Image (cartoon, rainbow, N blue to C red; front, side, top):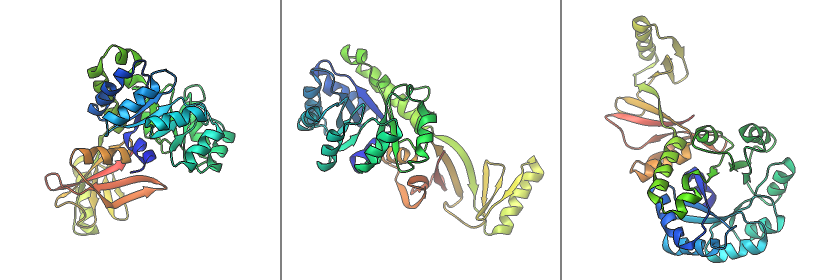
Length: 318
């Protein structure tokens, strides 16, 4: 998995301010315990270079990057310390060009069409949108995604636990950045268990798992329609006919053939499918990528390989 893909799979990129390098590794371990394996250490403190180096050397499971990088000298220093990706609040062509030529993942801040076109000219497909709440948030990024459909954003500034789900499920969002999961005060005072707790809560909200529908396997179209009509007669559920299946309300899908699952399937919706696939793999459940369907470059649906009680599990992008 490349570095940008790993940011997308993490979903939430913690923006970390380290004022004392000794707190860097405990913070990284707290994030890892909370299920987040990427971190952006801001380069605006004197301790930042040492902090990045400490995490790079001591936490191999953590992908550490440098944030608030404003010029090429800072960028080179951060990479020398072990930064695996660079985040900048604005667009500095010299810095971005060097990163591209050096095969370093970089997400510069771009909030205008002109800046986005500059990024595209250097081959970028992911940019930072900062400060998101000042420059129009989701509404602005949705408008920008019209003419720039191949660009994805990492909004930072104004993203929090309350609006995280709305941001993360938008198709033009690559990931989100934020400091609420690892506040400077929590780091300096050693509240690492709190950081872990906030990370777990953030991932849960970002994933947003919820029940979509139950699928029933039938031998053919006639039997599928017959089952739907029984639900209609018994409960008044409206029948909606489709190509490969019929629906009895939105909660019951009746297949026109014996599809995945011995008994049928259970569909689960999620805010970010790529993130969900990685989370499930961590927990021992592998996706059957041969069943994956895409809408543009975004995964829209995929089945798990393992059945649950005779039912296949179908993951759907909200």
